Length: 100
Image: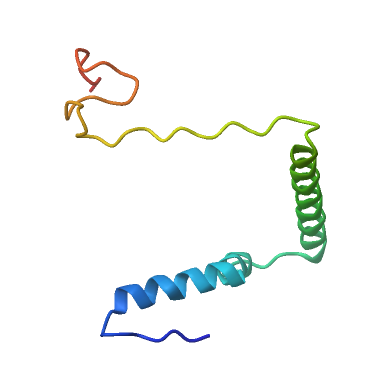
C-alpha cells in the first residue's frame, strides 16, 4: 500500500493512509493479532460476526421494504461557546454550578 505525498503535505498523506488502512481492515486485523486466539474462540467469534452481519442486512432490507421504521438520527450537541457560557454542560442550565 502506498500514498503519494504532495507539496510536502505529510498530514494529508497520513490521513489518506489511515483511511485506506481502515477500509482494508488492517486496524481490525492488528487488534485481533495482538493476542493469541484459540481456534475454538476464533470459530465462535466468526459465527457471531456472521450472525451480526446477517441481522444488520435483514434490518436494512426491512427498512428498505417499509416493514419497519428507519432508526432515528442521532442529534449532535452544539459546540461549546456557541451562545453558551463556558461553564455550561449540555442539558444542565448555567445557573447550577458543576459538582466538584
